[in-house]
Image (cartoon, rainbow, N blue to C red; front, side, top):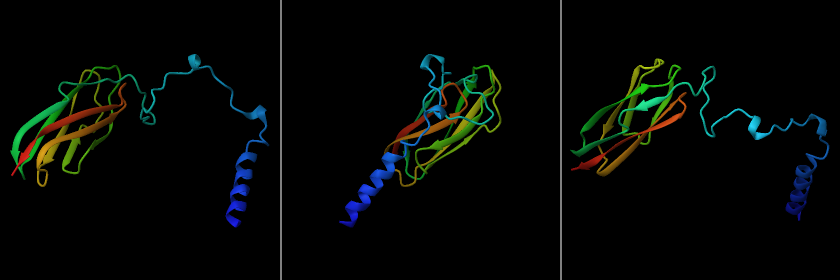
Amino acid sequence: MKGISLFFAGLMVITSCNSGRNQEHDAEEIPLDQMGEQPIGQTIIPGVETGGAVMEVSDDSHDFGKIKEGEKIEHEFTFTNTGTSPLIISNVHASCGCTTPEYSKNPIAPGEEGMVKVVFNSAGQLGKQHKVITVTSNASSPNTLLHIRGEVNK
């Protein structure tokens, strides 16, 4: 019985939250066609304008073929900033702890190249492999996916 009383008390508190609101202080409704474009899920980097930088990756996938377990494979992905603003990489994250990324930390000027180097440690990774590296930046497409694939045998 005590649980039911608490339930109804909570329900009353929730429903009464909006009853005393002064409607004059609500935010003004802005039509969608007057709002600035803000892509859903875009990472915002404080103080950095988004949309002016464009990350163009020459090849977003690398197949390392068949290797023996325990080998370390290294691959360097290169990209060019084809936009009009400096490209700033804020994070690079691999889908597995067996894959370690390194990347260009300095802003990449328009027309310049940058890199993401990936080291894959195949120890304990038997069978077909597909690892995804997510590059987060201030580019017009804020998340770029890079892929390494191959097969690890004993």
